Length: 109
Image 1 (cartoon, rainbow, N blue to C red):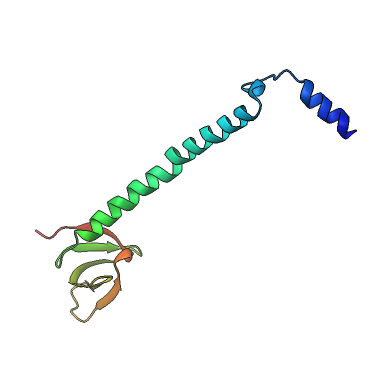
Image 2: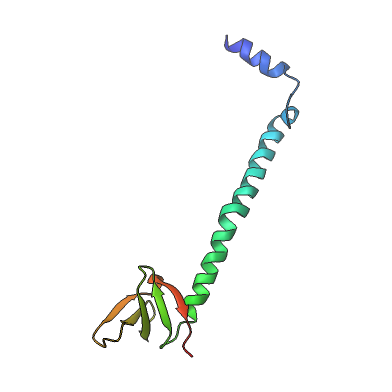
């Protein structure tokens, strides 16, 4: 039975798109799929990461921010990895958080 399948596979004349190219057709399919994945998934994600990094690197004290949880506040101090954000008019509501928790920044005027 296995020999019949091998003989049938060897005797096919390659019907279909790139079917007659054998192993090179398969390699071409994989290459096209890889390029598709790069342009649809990987490239846009890298562009978004660069945009977020640029936004976070341009943060300054006094900028108004929106956190990833939806809170509005003002930056009052910045360290290497953390920021201290003051929420509302209450001067006692100051919360340290990671820079990655900042979703949007509006520059101070």
